[in-house]
Length: 48
Image 1 (cartoon, rainbow, N blue to C red):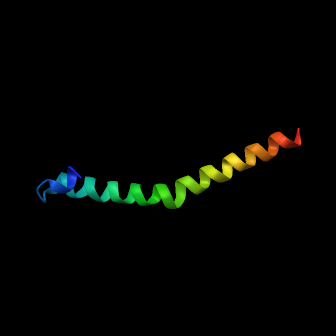
Image 2: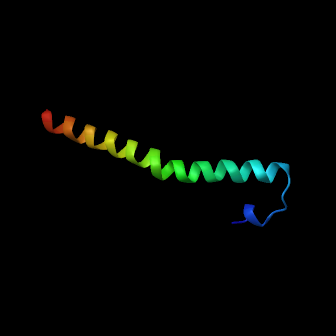
Image 3: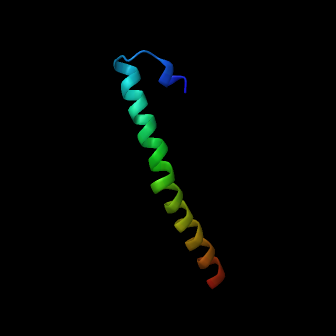
């Protein structure tokens, strides 16, 4: 929110774009992959 209130200048544009990409990739890619890894580890634990 603080970054969006800054002037439209070179470092703020790139930081805003990076933050937006990271925010959406977190929910689309990172959380499901972590869930798959966690479920796989739990399943492997039950096999022992």
